Structures are given as structure tokens and as C-alpha cells.
Image (cartoon, rainbow, N blue to C red; front, side, top):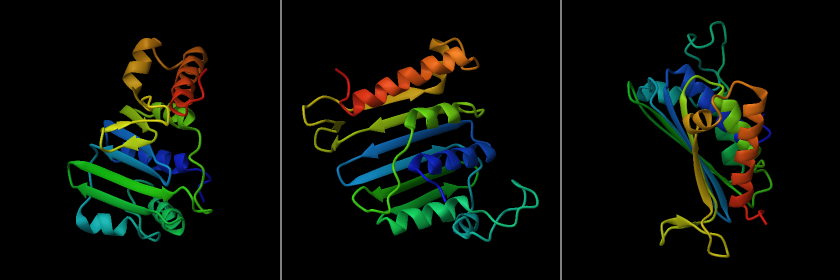
Amino acid sequence: MHAEICDFILDIVQNAVEAGASLIEVAFTETESTITCQVQDNGKGMTAEELSSARDPFYTDGIKHAGRKIGMGIPFLVQAAESAGGSVNIESEKGKGSECRFSFDRKNLDTPPLGDVPGTFLTACSLSCSLSCLHVGEYDLILNRSLSADGRDRSYVVTRNELAEALDGLETAGSLSLARMYLTSLEDSLRGMEE
């Protein structure tokens, strides 16, 4: 079973890459009561029948992982979210991509921790795709922006391409270390931990 919500994100991002996605958008939205995650891709998508089968742990297409008789990623996500008072919704269209949106009830004892968002984004950056990540703290639907108790904006967007351009690539230990420090500072700012 996955230990953190970010583990589910990485699993879905990897599925999207294996489905031929060249663009993947990840969004986290946190409120006092829920953590909602959304992964949208432009991969090959699924038919209605394939989409229905994706929730079945004893189904695999036999192509992506030859010889594997089961596919546990989505079923684990559904089990974890529903047992923690959350939900999972997957929409897909053949040839156009997929969107997986899931939520967890933050107050439920079975909800796993969010996890290491900077580490998750950097790990996903190692995959061959264009990737963006949006993380939103407390969200004010009336003002249509993320706010904290002190009224400051609590959201950020970062893309793999911007990081790679700013750091002249993401292939060296030094550039990855700088990227992690930058992403950690964004997370700290989002949570109001900066001085």
C-alpha cells in the first residue's frame, strides 16, 4: 500500500507517461477539510470499457507490463481514498488523454500524509514529459485565489521546463539540489513557514 498521497501521484504520472503523454499537469489543493489532487495528461486515453476495467485489480492490458496479471495502482487509490472518506473520479477519452481527480478527508484517521511534494515533483521530472505542478493552500472560491489567515496568497505553479532552463538542466546533483531547495522554499512559503 502507498504510504503517502504523493505516492499515488507518482503512480498516476508514471501511468500517463507509459500511455504516451507528453504533457502532464499535476495540481494539489488543500483546504481545512480535504486534500484534492488532479493529474491531467494528453496520453492515449481510454475507452469507456478500459476506464471501467481500470478499477479492477485483476485487469491489465497485458501490453504495458507484459506478463503481469494484475494492475493495482488505481484499485489501491480507490481503496485508500474511499476508506478515508474521500473519492476518486477518472475521466478519459480515447486519443485525447485522461484526468484523474481524487480527494481525501484530512480529518479522517485513515488519510495518509500528503508527503514530500518537492521530492515527488523532482522524481516526476526524471520522466520524459513536460510537467507542471500547481499547489494551492487554503482556497477562497469567492476571491478565486488561495489565501492564508493573514490574507497572503498561498499558491504556486512550477514547470519542469522552467526549472531546467533556470538551472541549465536537471541532470547534475548540483542542479537537483538547487531545484529541491527552490521547491522546498515554495512549500515553506505556501505553509507560512518563511520568516
